[in-house]
Length: 121
Length: 229
Image 1 (tube, one colour):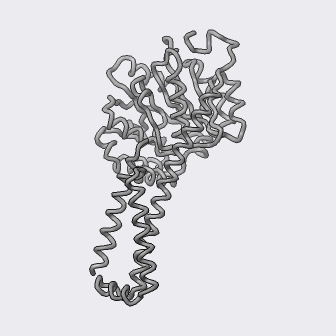
Image 2 (cartoon, helix red, strand yellow):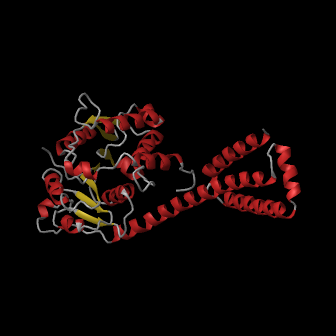
Image 3 (cartoon, rainbow over the protein chains, first blue to last red):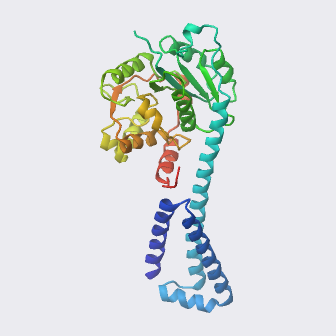
């Protein structure tokens, strides 16, 4: 069925796109556009369910609701990956911040045995 | 043995208060320069480190072993006279003699980094499941196969300034081991392996990373992006 190809292809393309361009301005804009499109699709599905059913039968899905569900699953997957990557990036920044603090307050050992503290004074 | 003042040991520490002082004092008989990175321990490991004669760098919060290694390397490479760097586990499973041999190779042979490996000749002392998982990791990693390395997740590594200057571990957790291997492949560092002995003490077995963690490592490595780091 057509829908299978569409869903699999969409998923694969989106994953590749995300992993290659995550964090760029362009990727951010694409995500917002995709989200807007998804909302529009949702509104249309509510206003004109018949049209969605028609579209569904075109791509080989039984009912319009099923089509909406399929797209929802893909959208959810992407929202999850997006959040995961965002968290990773934040974690890295946070680590760098903590590292800077740690390095500033580093403690050298007591200079009680100077011949053994190792550094070349 | 010769002067080892140009060698710095980086020891990531997370809740190792019962053993860390002993491990550090043992190591300092040979290598005077030790920096312990306390990764936000909650068991007063920092007090033990203060009394052990090691330098102490303290993460204000727990960040993970990869982050601790990076912090320690950044600290060590800023110290005057530092030429050689060692990553060493805090739980006492690594041997000082192994480090000495690896440093010796780094001084005398044209290599940039020497990695410890558990897979030379006898592997009987490694628990079976652990052996199986580690072997599988090697088979699955293209970088490891390319470099003909046998052990990806050995915490014992010795490297020179070139490597230390360019070391940039961004995976905070346990994924750093694979990331270091990828760095070696990408930067064309000359790499060698040295057979080392790991003491699987009861303490280190209880603390050691669980095999489940392999799933986390795999996931982190697969879902890395090319975003600016």
